[in-house]
Image (cartoon, protein in one colour):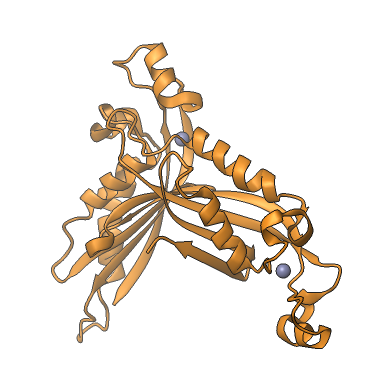
Length: 272
Ligand SMILES: [Zn+2]
Ligand SMILES: [Zn+2]
């Protein structure tokens, strides 16, 4: 049995290491380099696994879990400058990768019978890190979101109009219809020990924008996009297309692509 609890904290940080020169800081952190602070409303989801205790009917008393999260994480970060007030970060960049590792280490020891299996730490709704602690899938990933608008028509030319209507319903409307797609791109890689980062987000954004967003945005997928002239642009196919287009092109290893077609459905394509 697993349960997930969410906590929030607001903290300031700066991407600027005092023992480096200005030039070195700017080379290391790119457009995020600044000797001044900025802040985030961080949100952390902690997933805990264990057996249901027959006496309480719970895996862990949520009050106990809240106390642990507050003592070991929230009270250390909330309303603080991470660089100056959390001792670990005096010499480590306060990147999401380092922060999620700090949180995983802080929660490594839990009451008997329960264990941490997954953490998600969100810096903004457009960027979060996840640390999976389970077995062979143990890894830290970073997810960035992008948006594009496109229209499409679900239609198989080998089927009759009636068959298409029966299969695709309204989605087979002859003149198409559109969506505001939200794309999540998840990567992993080795964390640079100095910058604390596994990927240069500026370079990642440039690649995703060039290869996917600019390519698909404000297009009619069936008519404008070569790859969908012979293929039905369902969200399954678009998701796989995005994955294949980005795979081996990003400055980090692509793990997963998730495409939200509407607020009610999303599609995921991942490496095995
Ligand atoms: Zn920041
Ligand atoms: Zn549609």
